Length: 240
Image 1 (cartoon, rainbow, N blue to C red):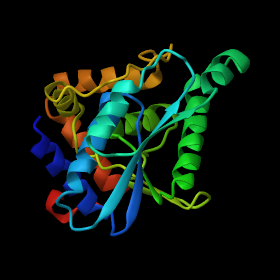
Image 2 (tube, rainbow, N blue to C red):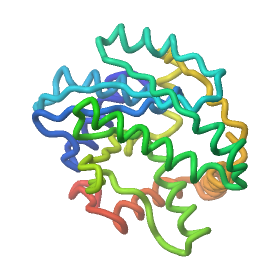
Image 3 (cartoon, helix red, strand yellow):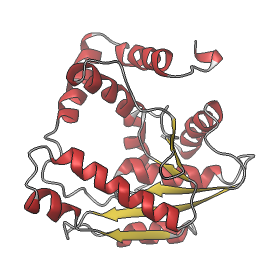
Image 4 (spheres, helix red, strand yellow):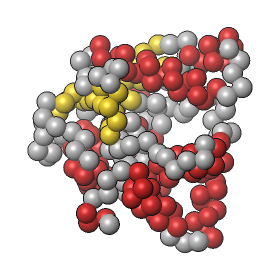
């Protein structure tokens, strides 16, 4: 996928759900993976031509595994003239050694988001951009259906009243395969996730399930997404 196509996806999501307005300062959460780096690249490109003027900063919450090198990401941000902040934490030690969590993802995510939110506020940001893409939304819907018995997904825009921060998800229209293609084409500086449970979660199971369903019923993934938009939040007129 070329940059212009990524910009087009992101601009449409931002416009459809009024994600960005004049004067916003947006913290982009950088995990080190392809999704967050693609989001950072896209928002930096969007700044050049989007009507609303906004600023971005990049924040990585270092979980403390000690084997993730962020130097290439730092250079990536420097090349785009983006301030980059790495927040050191002991989340890995707390989750895996102290608490010995049998379901580590939930506590890890809660603590990671807390550190990200606190840093964003300290830096004067009023919004945080998460790199959830189209496949993430479909998989979250299935996770809720299978394990919670409800039709639910995170919203494109979410206001966190306790923090006075707004979460936006500008990659919501981008298929994961396009993110992979973009990452390969532009050689994004991925810092591999060192988490020991990566690839062995319920989300990974659902990802494989959706893939199988789409192989057996071509086009059903796209129909899942349309059902999600129709059922969970406002669907733009030209997508009805």
